[in-house]
Image (cartoon, rainbow, N blue to C red):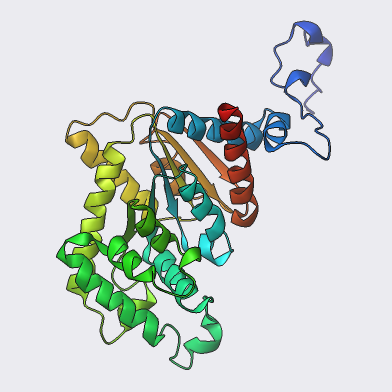
Length: 311
């Protein structure tokens, strides 16, 4: 026997006016004019999803700096490779970013930009020749920095200080951090970076220098109550390092109330979601987008808010 169609006459309807709705016109986008300020653009964003997330992130950064709290950026290699170093450097020089963390790949690209004004080789073209990752100057410089950093300065500072003398030091994250005396830590897993295959590479020195940086980073994180941690373009390394630093801080009795986490990347990943914007923070946002668009936009909006505060 065929199943009879359900009688929709049994459905009870409700008036639209009395129904709770998730979308209202007072949260729609505004239309700032062509000469709008960054602050006006920020306020014109729709109050939904990434629009709300970006507004929340800007507000968290500004509030942290107003209150003398830290704003730490963890930057992956593509931040340098997409030409965004000047954006991050300006935020450091303006007093917005108070500390940096990076994996080894970021430090490699940062050194090559500072030294030669160019970076990022053709992996596919050089791999079969056995030439990929064999830059003499890069490997030699990192080997020397690892040896020096293991002695007490840590890897980031041991790289940054001598990089201040390189031709393009003004475009270097590590050289700028050294000049401004800001913490800048480099976190490596031996075997993951091209400099680890250089004849002068010393795994013991690399490990010791990077472990010192982990301890320095943990000190930074332990003081981040009411502050902001922004992960930009690191899918695995920095989210894991951040989570470990948070647990050490809690283990030592440091409370991280009010910590805000943000992830900015082209793609969303498991570790960035749970290790940056979920488990270790009170509030967090995950905004997908290209670094070369999102970082300049974030800079303008943060500086626009801070400029209004000074008026």
